[in-house]
Image (spheres, rainbow, N blue to C red):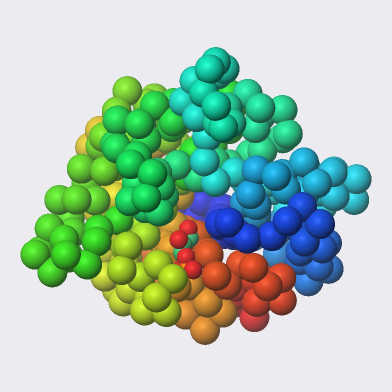
Length: 257
Ligand code: 13P
């Protein structure tokens, strides 16, 4: 278990132009040390328009920060106006792609079936999916958190190989905790993370369950990250608001200091 490298991802959502992204990546790189990267894999996921600029900074300066995307289309190419494909992202050396974020499910109609196709597209092009799952407040209050989360994991990973899942991440992001300043209770989040790992084990076996990194997301900040990382089944975090300021995000990444 302990051999899983921690993974902390900054989801910038619809913030930062490419010029701002350059500054943020540079600033973040000043704040992090090589030892930090030995322990934590650090990914930033800017908007599509900023990916190229961020890639150039990362590669020109040999930074250890990795590049993520926030969404992808499931087809490799075609008449899909306004969409971006997995081969396009792979060509930019994007390593991780966030799939099925609750904002996309709620506002852009993404179903589990669509999310599943996207997970497969990401894997097909050698990148790692970060599959997002989580219950709404209503679902939590009606006691269906476990059922909702297990269903999203099963549907999202349908037909995906154990090898892909072993190298993938699943982010538990309770919808009510996103952008609200109300983070989940770390014990609760730890239990859901364990449930996610058990679900992966029952579907895909031990190696996939051991390798998959389970992240927590929802109002993570420098003050609460430590409590989440202390949970045995939580291997990292998906961070929204607190990833936009490089000083704050660096404090999240270096949570043990
Ligand atoms: P916040 O950290 O702003 O709550 O956002 C979480 C999130 O949605 C990350 O994907």
